[in-house]
Image 1 (tube, helix red, strand yellow):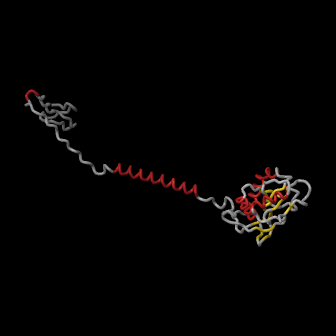
Image 2: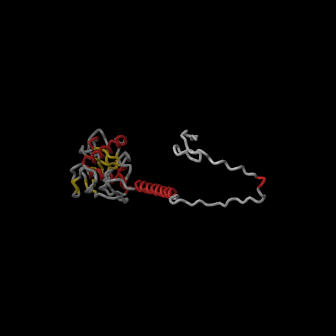
Image 3: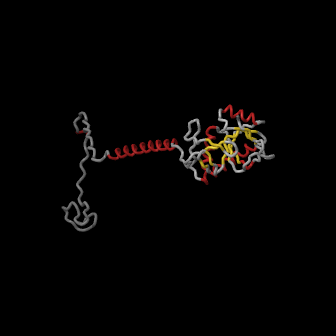
Length: 255
């Protein structure tokens, strides 16, 4: 007889074709169940059989848990690092560390200057000459407009210095001068830095001068501010700012 699948001849008693493997004589379907012949009675459900857990099926959950722990730990470390960075002190490259009598880091000693005022300095400022000179010039540029409004008035002078000035065993350079101004600014935030060459009331035209912007009509009133501030007589005195006239009678020292 021929195969019903491939048509090749096979024996009649074959169930599967030896050529194509197809079923030739499928078994007859089971007869339909006659429900009327079944005895009545309760139907017993098949018992529930729990499927065995395959080895390794819990690994994905474990991996997910470990990943979450690592992520949370990473976020916590990032927060701590950022907080520490925000609270960290600035680098010494930003500005020289200077202190005052109020408790900052360093306090340079005071010494006399060529204009009868006081100068100060300390060894080892962090800025080099070029950087310190730039910082001084930038400060004068910022203070110039306010200082110009004081012309024609007496003001308290707190410091006067130039590169090469020797006082109290210190030879001043630009870093020392910048440190001195920073010290005074820390003690008196409103102080101004001016260039003596911008005013004829100074004998020498090449000094960096630190003044307090408290205009007074006379030297006595300017010296009164120094008295009330409790500054030593050699550290603060009256100075007249002017673009006209000369340098005579423009300085009044305190007694």
